[in-house]
Image (cartoon, rainbow, N blue to C red; front, side, top):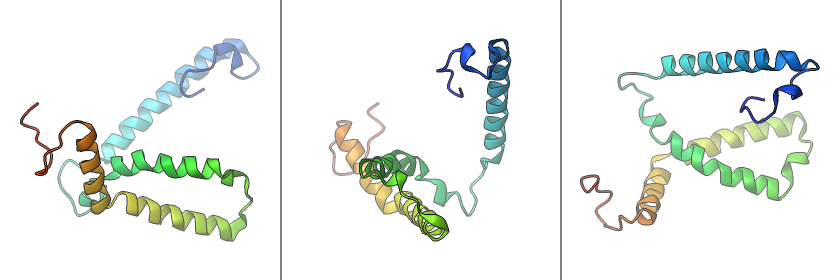
Amino acid sequence: MFFGSKPYDDFLNFSEWGFLVRIVTFMLAIIGMLAFFSLVPTRETKYTKEGKYTLIAYLLHGFFIRGMRAFDLENIHLGFPGFIILALASIVLTTLLASEPVGRVYSKIEQYFLGNRKKNGPSYNNL
């Protein structure tokens, strides 16, 4: 529904409302994006450094999700203590993946596969 992959007839029980539901959904998505961008700082703050590698954390977390799905861990009933442990493990994993050492290693691997195999780091002058 949110990605436009379903036909209008699949919305609700009334196919006539499908167009309206999709328009409202897109409007809410636009409002959400604008709200998110209003939170993005325009100057460097004390937590700006922590957000430097969040894209890398986003890109790498998929490997852990795939691993969980491969072992069919999504069907395990954890209960409340298991949920708390899972939440804490998620915070630790996110902090680890968004750390500077992981970012540096990822950058080296990325530059290697992009063809920039120099040992001095990325060279953006040759673009």
